[in-house]
Image 1 (cartoon, rainbow, N blue to C red):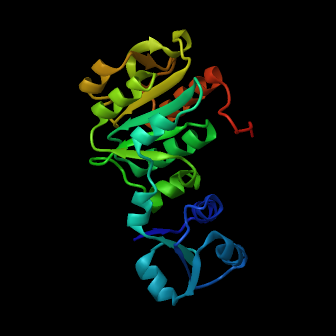
Image 2 (image 1 turned 180 degrees about the vertical axis):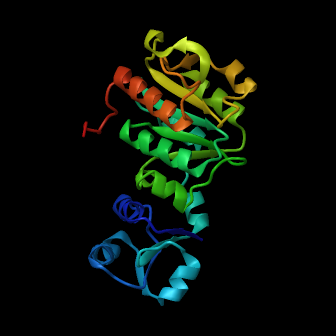
Length: 248
């Protein structure tokens, strides 16, 4: 069971439909919690009153309510990469692959940028990576409820599947081609590496190119979530808005 306690996270889960079948546990319904309770009926979410001590045991740090999601249901809602590739319509798309990023706050921030910049999919490895926990959902400000995610057993094979589907693949690295000079068009997949170690050698070698963000300061690198946001912004600027999405 996964418990969401952030108000943004719970609101977006209810709005997106990803909370269907979940339970909203309530101990102290303030005005915002009451509004969520009103939304639960049409969102397919059960409301259950619990004692404050019980809620604190299940979801420490709550503010009067927590949304209880079945972990198995969340796993089943993930996107199958092969199905995604087969269903792609149009010449352009943006995919972000995360190479074993383990910090939940970085993952949450990347998912938030993925929603803002209209990434069509985020690809995560099944092992040695941050999971979609309350911390991730909080860091994403609820955006994780909207971003399609594919969990794959092998990133190298997933990269090959994307290339077979017409994607140009790029690894993010400080020693790559400067982002303004790169040609980004069509179907683009960006690979972001783990904190500290970066993109693995195997994935780097299999990518079509390597991109770097120009830097002019005194520190030697950007946080991976910041770099991901910059790369996604530039890719989306070049590709244009995704179908059906209006600029906010």
